[in-house]
Image (tube, rainbow, N blue to C red; front, top):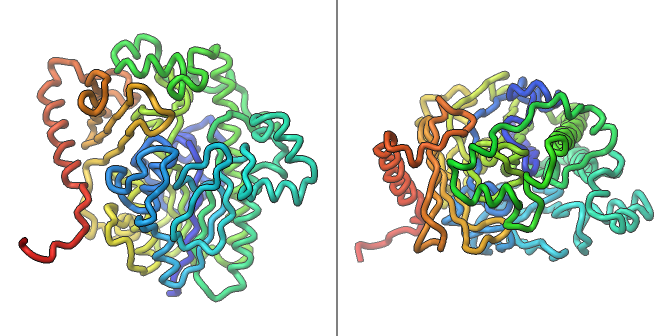
Length: 479
């Protein structure tokens, strides 16, 4: 069999349950549901950070935050880090990207620095909002809709979210992806293309025809109430009042009706992406590429969406923040309609792609290929019963800093809120029994009956952190 093509479709801030195939009857995602039906759906995929840059660095390097060093948004990845697309390019793959990348600082229109990433095609636009000389979406708007860019910039960021579909950032992602696929169909070279959507990232807005699909009053209200936060670390009450370390409105700034409107807009953004995925899948079919293309759909982290009296993201390690969709389709190799409940991590995706391509690379990778699980070779898979996620004041910076580490081990979740000497904040934490409390409403950290369990999990976390330290440099002698 010829080496397969690789197509990675990645959204920004899409929680695990914002998908019809995941059992959500309120959201419309027919194309993603089709992708799940034609391949494998992982129900317990955890990212390595609840914010963009650190999480995306883990995807590209297959390494945990404490090793790849991109510990926060606004930090540039080290040029010494290796990303899997460089290895694919070295193996003869034609690599391309459109949309967000976020392996470096991009605020204020800064041009995100690139390392040796292997991309021949690089249509970068961090987001639709800020002017930047390298914003390819703005170039596309100028070329195809004269005058619209200046008008929309003058109106403010929210105007970009509500642009007509034909001029929307997500539609641009679809167009650029389809153009690449059409060119690839005429070439005799396998490809890897990464399509990074910005939706359903806030601001919460969508083209009118998508927003009209949803009635806010018919959508379920967020889970949790004010009493819930009384049993959680104080940072959550702080974030409920103001998001992003005080830089953005908090949950409490909105009425119940406004929260429902936010949810309707968020669902509308997901449906817009779903339609673009449908166009991309149709292009694969039309160009005769579908049969030999591995399609992966996922997201860099989740969104609180009002749950737990919170919005957006930050140091929170609830499943709605760090558990994401993961769909993998590979006709003839991956059995259709699989639902996998194994614990997997974002660091597993790069080794999966390299294994599918038959390519060597990433000698310092910490993840492992998921192919044995989904291609019928489960004897080659040693079940992992733990996953790890880290936050090191990684989003909008808090003062004092907020550092949290999450361990999911079996059906328990431990979240350590680090104190001195890591931070001037008091040491605190969270402990959940996900079998009894899947919504993570009841914090057992301070429950005397759970002291032994908490201690056991904290000790396991220490062992996991040692196990995942950077020790890839060879030892060439005893001394």
